[in-house]
Image (cartoon, rainbow, N blue to C red; front, side):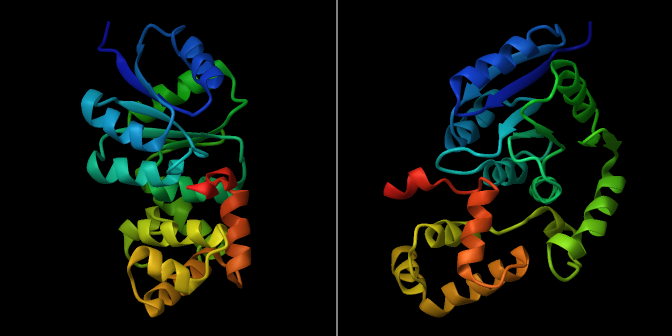
Length: 231
């Protein structure tokens, strides 16, 4: 038998994590090497256990799944990440792939389909819906979607996989909590003009007209959670 595929589960709901574990344990080729309930713990665990594949919830406390994916792929690009989400829409798929994910699945996916996707991404492929793509095909797919979801065509291929920079995401989180540009500048120790520049970039990338729409977008896609606003 070939070497087992090491899988890390990242989700903040214990029942859902256990459900995933139960599903994956039916395939002897898979070895669940760890679980994490938030993104920061996941990043630490990744360096300790070096999994082959990560099942990543998009809606996590402290850091959302897109941010965590981007960080992990930046440090350990060989790890394959499958986003699992309750927000099943084409635009979210686009952002997940841009962040570095290899596949995107709704939470109601069948056990057989999920196991199949783990094997598929481990082999270096990408999965969107029922479609299996190689790297070149997924880059083409992203480029086709860019006009609709991401504003002007981006020439730098690396940029294709990044919806918002970590700093832009940080600023957007503060916006969703009702902070003004001046308050954000003070909190982050940057100039008011720098915050305004970042806000301009955020609005352009998200294709929205104002900060309220940007905040609604972030909340609707599960990038930010309101219950974290006390922190």
